[in-house]
Image 1 (tube, rainbow, N blue to C red):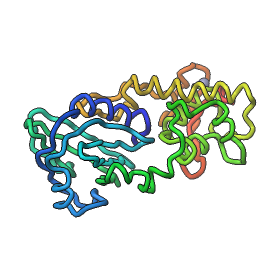
Image 2: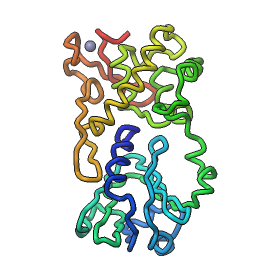
Image 3: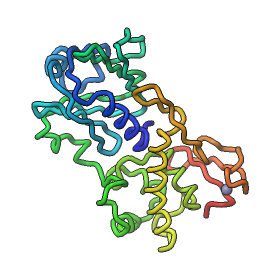
Image 4: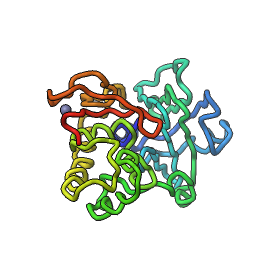
Length: 268
Ligand SMILES: [Zn+2]
């Protein structure tokens, strides 16, 4: 599932190639993906519009168009957005094709439960998913005090990090990479963290996400120009393998119904 680093990587690669482009045609090959319009109305709504900039909120991409419309793309489980200049014919995995006035094209591929919606920019605060999102962990609003305030209650620290209504953008993969870097076990009750651990974890959330963006996200992710993520996973998906710190074997368990990975030697 693309999380904040992957969606931000997609955003940056799309911003580089799409800014200023005028949408000439839209072909919806999988109508279920478009949630706000019928395919034909969706195409008519987009055609002739210029892409001004591409933003991100949590795990969602927002294509801000001239004339105060915004196209929202939510990856959900998976998806690849590929830019081609000149445009190439879509493959069977392509759900939506956007062609631009200069002959280039954008394909929305391999979508899994992904959603597209076209909204008036002035009404974005009525889109339920966007209004429910918590603080962006890379924004100035994510302060140490605010983070500390999230840690009451009996839930695990993994559950706090992945709760989109508290912190927007961290999912199961990056929560585990962050917790390994901070040397904290994912199943620790959030309220049991010491002040020193809270400080380390706060800084680690931001530093790991920033480094993950620089690396282009996790290894299976592909950006708009076809570049793969270059992050080397420390624990996620590495059950039974050696901890990169060289001190133990990665353990895999279930936590809250989802897989959980940690090193019993260096995480407490
Ligand atoms: Zn270890």
